Length: 482
Image (cartoon, rainbow, N blue to C red; front, top):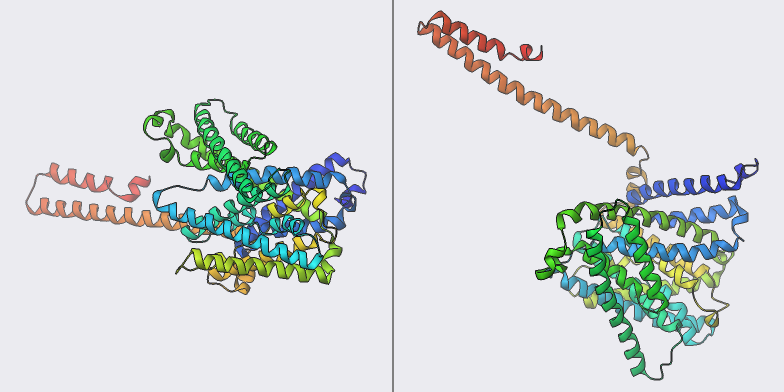
């Protein structure tokens, strides 16, 4: 882009070219991530950092940080919706859901408190302000986890999807509670306030989701998929204005849409045409997946543009980050050991990356809680360290060595390889069918020859013998080909 800008090209076309290239590069990063388990968002952040040097004028642009928050919030909506559309409910999964909720809740609260004490120690700040900064660091990134756990066993995969989604939702509730003006004067007021907020959100989520799914099923227009996404975004915005936990609304809608058999029973069963809903649901899932990919791409590239590289070489920032990450894994180990008693906790223990929601909440901390000595580099270190640990754990869970993944599996000729593999399979199927057909024809010819010999030996009439010979001639493969 920098080279093109020196040639007097219209900036609008530069923007189009640059945006297109970023999406194409993100697709390549997805392939690399699939082969190596390196989170694609980590590669996107590195791309954003590289753009600081390629296009220096973007670094000081005031629109960058504003667009980061907007893109992040819409991206979060689509990522949670994408996860919900993948979750199937059944009675045997109730225990899994409860356990994942408890792990997310206890780990969030425990990590937040311990990190808050650490921030207070390092920066000599008030505990409340430290807690405001600790909460974003304690939230797992569903934006990284959901696309990264597809290779896990089904139970572990669903556990991680539920846990990361609950972590996002509970983390936002906790953060909003800390940063929203309130008149709480006692612990009882706090409990009543938070409980009533969650209860109201759940009631709104259930009513809205049933109505929205029914309307979704009734729509006959071809232009309706982005209409639904717009309505969900509208509900998220309205809910946020009234300090509701809006992600719960998105989560409920996705789960109900993907489990109409569970939620539309008895008298409600006739409201939904499941056969009509199936193809539309499939299309909606694809649109959500593609949109989440697009927004996630630009969010992490923009975040990379905002990173202050100077803070990365600060020794104190590195030490603080290591302490915070150590707290995250220690708390997670204890919680998983207790909740998942007598069950294997790897690689789940190491799948705890920080990402989109951490960055998003960090940029929305009110000014009155501002800590001047808390550097942005802490966020980047936390994201880098947790992502690298997750990458190593995912590779180990596949029973492979890192060198094998990086050298053997990372083959950029995958398109050609896949084409050759498909061609080989088609040829194998073709020759297999030809062989079977030839064997059948051979058996048929042998039967006819035997009949002719029997007819001759029995002194049959010439007409019968000629008829048998004509049958043999018509059954010949060469005749058929002609």
